[in-house]
Image (cartoon, rainbow, N blue to C red; front, side, top):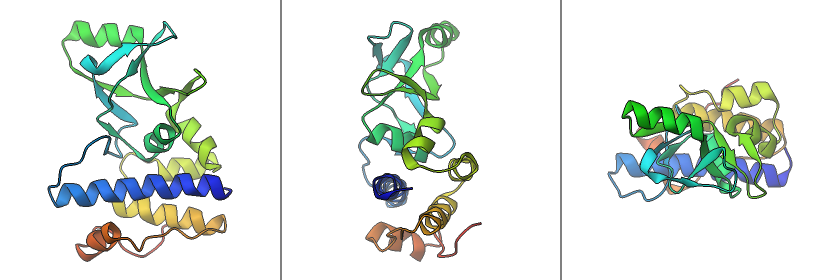
Length: 176
């Protein structure tokens, strides 16, 4: 993990911490919401055609995990295959779960794999960081472990980190 890759990690973790703290404080949170259990979710009404006719692109994504944040911060748009959209629409459901994105250069990527590449971490490290059942303390703890492993220090001194620490949502221990 080089310095650019570390900045991506720091940014994604800061966003998850901010969103969690804002949620607890019941503040308005525009944009993407942190939900570690989903690469991304969106409403079917928020999908539009893309240049790639096999996929529809999300105008707005409602939730995403750390991996989704890393990918979206690089300018990608979450997308769904047209066949999946057609199936969901026929079922009457309004929400779709997303595991792919279209990058700025038009390439369709798996969110988890692309995020792992953008962060410069090994598959097992990505598996731990992106686990769907990680709570905010586990995300921060494992991000601290990764940062240290690669010679960086995760900055956890901000007001949102302190707010969550004060309420017992984040500990200072590192996870293995």
